[in-house]
Length: 90
Image (cartoon, rainbow, N blue to C red; front, side, top):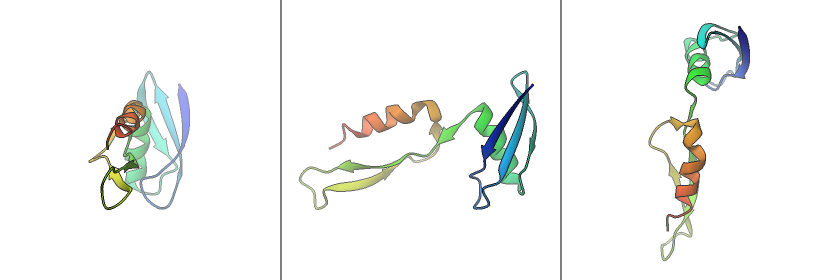
């Protein structure tokens, strides 16, 4: 049995979560004060995702840089690939 401690980002409360994992399956999430916390804890230990927000340079545009953001969550393991791809945008 494994215990992971996380700070929830599901709402502004920032609850300290404890996620109990047994044989790769989430058995219990505690410390949350809302349902979003339980959902976040389960997802974060089984399939972590992130939204990437960054800026890209603009050549010949009105502004030197513009903000960009992924349309939705992407796998956490793909974040660096996403940022690298942004570096080629002009």
